[in-house]
Length: 230
Image (tube, rainbow, N blue to C red; front, side, top):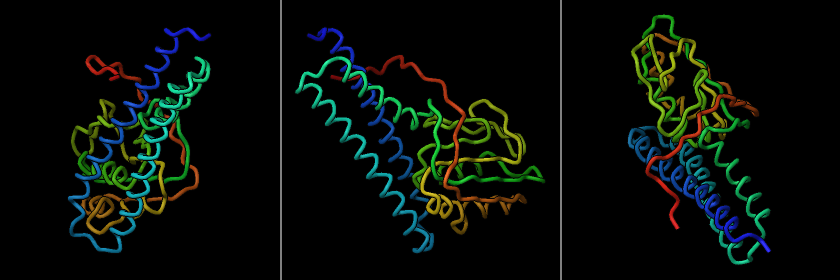
C-alpha cells in the first residue's frame, strides 16, 4: 500500500505544476491583449495570419491545462501508486519547463538577425520584436545568450542594450520556436519590427526553419509568497 504522506507530496507537486501552467497561460493572454492594441490599424490580410496563430496557441494552452486537470482528477480518483503520480508530475514539469525557460527546447520557428552599423537600434526595438513574437504564438525565445521569460526586461540605450542584466551587442540574434510563417509575418507587418529597424539605420533578416534550438536556460525561481492552492 502506498505511503499516504508520499501520495500527498506527489499530489502537491502536480498541483504546483498546474499552477505554473495556469500562470503562464494568464501572462501569455495578457501580453497578447496588449500587443493586439497596437495592431488595430494593420492590413486585414496580415492580421488574419496572426489571428490564426493566436487561436492555435490559445487552443494548445487550454488543452494543456485541461489535460493536467484531468490527470490530477484521475490520479486522485483511482488511487494510483506513488510511482505513477511521480512519473506524471515529471512529464508535466518537463513540458512546462520549456515555457518557463528552465529546460532546453527545439522545434520549428524562426531565427532573426538584426544589424546595427550606426548604433541606433535601441532596447525598445528589441522589446517590440520579443512582444510581436510572443503575441504571434512563440512558445520560447532566446535573444543572444539570454533565454527570455515572463519577467524579462530590456534596458540600456541604443548601441548599449541590456537584457536581464546581460550586455548584448549587434548583430542581435533572436531564436524563437513556434509556427514559422506566423512568426515571420508578425515581424514583417508594415510599420512593425522590420520597418523600425530600417528607420534606425539597421538591417534585419528573418529565416524560417524546421528546427530551431534554444539552449540558454533561466534559473529556477523559488517563490517567497506564492504556494500551491488546494
